[in-house]
Length: 313
Image (cartoon, rainbow, N blue to C red; front, side, top):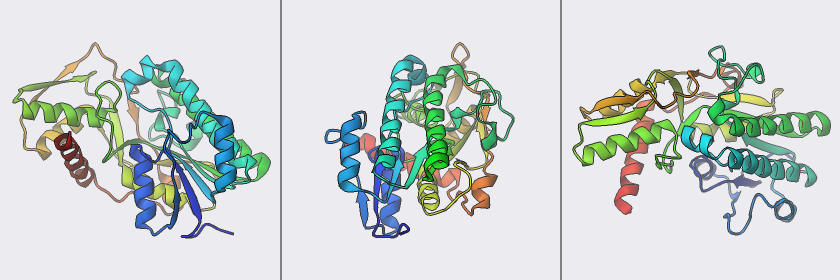
């Protein structure tokens, strides 16, 4: 029986940026039986508990948005935690799905699984063709293990497990902690604080020349549901916007959007990370999925959500 609007769909990590967007999108698409569970009731690092939860609830599909994530600082500082926690969580869910005969699963990775000095735009078959960016290597290796688990369970057990590799994701409910956030929310927070405190400058990490691609989180959520319903030959599929800009350009775009004139300084003693990460999204387009939300629209939705969360504090 294929997945329909009454099928039980388990979203792991439903409180995070991506997970909460997937739940919103499923509800918007009239899915009636969305399964979520808070961390205090189900520890995803506990293999036995995950297995029993899946056996009891028997979802028709699982979307794994649960992961330990962060920007350059967090990835580099908590290297052991990033590899350990991600390996355990994804392994428990993927193997638990198999043991409970759950055939449909979406595993979410990250564009950092690809080699640091990759040919651009990055095709899916560039995976494991070179060295990874050192600062996020433990996280990337965990995610590569998840991709290969899905691929090999499909080959051996004829499951329908897919790995979607999104580019940098942003949107409402993002993490704005300067130490653990990704670059875009970090810039938003720094610009907002400069505006509130009437500061004339902000300082950003690196040279400002590194290029990044962004995808609005609702587009990624839409891709998860689209590919949950699709039979694909490939296990690994890139999800992105198909456009990238430098960190400097993103900072200037935010200033222009908010009619601000704040000087940007770059701390060149800090790392840039990977020089460029632009995904080739021709495979997802071939299957009929396209991103729909522009950077301008996505930014204003995100900024509005950020400001209202600050005002609630």
